[in-house]
Length: 110
Image: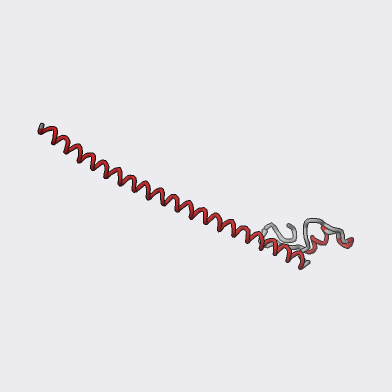
């Protein structure tokens, strides 16, 4: 914090001095799990892992988009079916009203 300030945008990704101290300075001790940013093999391996994870994420996103499209298709079909049922119900009610009117006229004449 003292060297780079509190603003994380101004802080560097890799501080070689801190790395050197954490690794044991001149004694060349080891700090496991941190990797070595100056080693191109480590950087390439990490880049490859990031690319692999990005591919997995893209596949998941694509799969979810396909599921969303499939569900939207089902919803659209259900909405159309509901509208069709509504129209059939209205037509049936009109026929029933017509039949009731005919029956009332028929029985009034008798």
